[in-house]
Amino acid sequence: MGTKEDVRARLNIADVVGEYVRLTPAGKGRMKGLCPFHKEKTPSFQVDTEKGYYHCFGCKASGDVFGFVQQVESLSFGDALRKLADRAGIQIDAKYGEKTSRDLYEVNAFALAYFRSHLPGPALDYLRGRGLSDETIAAFELGYAPDGWDGLLKLARTKGLTERQLLEAGLLTENPENGRIYDRFRGRVMFPIRDHLGRLVGFGGRVLDDSKPKYLNTPETAAFKKGELLYGLDRARTGLGSGTELVVVEGYMDVISMHQHGFTGAVASLGTALTAEHAQLLERLGAQSIVLMFDQDGAGLKATLAGLDQTIGARFRVRATSVPSGKDPADALFSGDEAGIRQALAGGLDEVKYRVQAATEKYGVDTNEGKRGVLMELLPRMQNLDPLDSIAQDMRTAACELLGIRPGALLDWIGSKAKRRTLTDTHLAGMSQSGGEEEHELALLRQLLVDPSLLAKLDGSMPWRNEAVRKVMLAARGAQSSDDILDLFRGQPEEQLLIRLMFEGRDSGSLSRASSQEYEQKVTAYAAAAVDDIQVTLNIDALKNEVELLKKQIAVVPPAEQITLLGQISELQRAIEAEKRARRGN
Image (cartoon, rainbow, N blue to C red):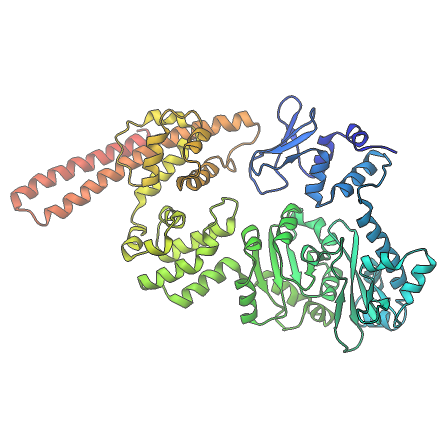
């Protein structure tokens, strides 16, 4: 029998990680790639092949080869060890209770064979009557739990399985009054439920008549945790990384019918709403957008979006839709309405559009009171300043466009500690789009975060309008890197702004990725040019402001003074043209 260290010695961590992450060389004994545990655009995940460890400089995930498989596959240590031991061709002992989950999978496999053997008859006729092909019935391993109180229990005893094992797997139930133990599933079509790794963790059973409960699931066990499971995900997961849209429907038959007709992204929750655990799992599997396809009217779909878990909404683009005919997906497909399914998947209510529309209809935007109401309504979904939360960003963008306020001013308000008290009429006026100078200042700060040495290009006399920019500019002199600047504001309100600007400033999406060195050279050159350009823009803005002030004065001064002011305006306009020529390099 081998040990954990035998398995470690036989495996190269880069080979294991490489099955989940596209790795490229990053120096002697090091590899890098995009982190599988959080969304990112530039690689911050590194593997040290000599020491056998991985570390992400973004989300701080780290560990050895066993920890990586545990985290990426949501496995216990024992299951991760066995998985890697199988890969290495090493047989290991089961210890520390590691065999418990495996026992449950094996007991469930025994039960599945029993259910499958009883499928021919009324249950098979029912499934065929719902439009399922024999190939689909076999692929989804559908079966039948016959009537009778102890058919499964009797067979289990002949195979050496104990009542305790079946009870722990949720296949038996016990009468609390008399202590009698009997089969949990009786007279039901059986749907085996597998986790995202394909392990058989439990069952769902449906009656063939109108008796209650219509559906019955395996109770919570060491392997079956319904808040973490999605029926059909073991099949749907294969397409998620390549852009397949995840479609969450209501029932097992909906999932199976959807897959039979080529909609292979269909899954179903097990009687629960989507949870934070679902979000974490789906993010790791590469899901990007989710469609909630429920048998509801427009009001029901809006309620679905309104009650959407914040964790799901923060990580995925979510839409809610229903089949136009009002049928559930299985019935629609059975009646030949595949076009209706495609129409539903192409439309629906987008979460961002829905929330903005609902807030607008509720409060209106023609008055400051209405604008206040809209902002407070949207605040819970806008206030996450993590640059990876694209939904929050889209919500802020939509709010700015709707209300005519500046993105920088909105972020300042969101970051304030007294949001409700500070949103006065004066504050709303100050957030209006008229403050373009502050946006230029933020753009300048963004480029300086790329290369702090460019601070030397500024003469120190700039009258900063944005208070956060002013603080950073004063504190950052002498900083050698963007990390130095960030350290100065650790734990302060400006920190989130700096993180966002640093992320945007280092987005290399429009630049060549031929090599990291070439990328850094291009970023540095771009930043230097941008600082020159933005400083000229700020100078032009300042000159234009002076012109506007002089124009207002002309209307209230005597004619003799008007001539003087006109001369000053003329000089300022020539200066503006000179600055523009300088920016164009003329």
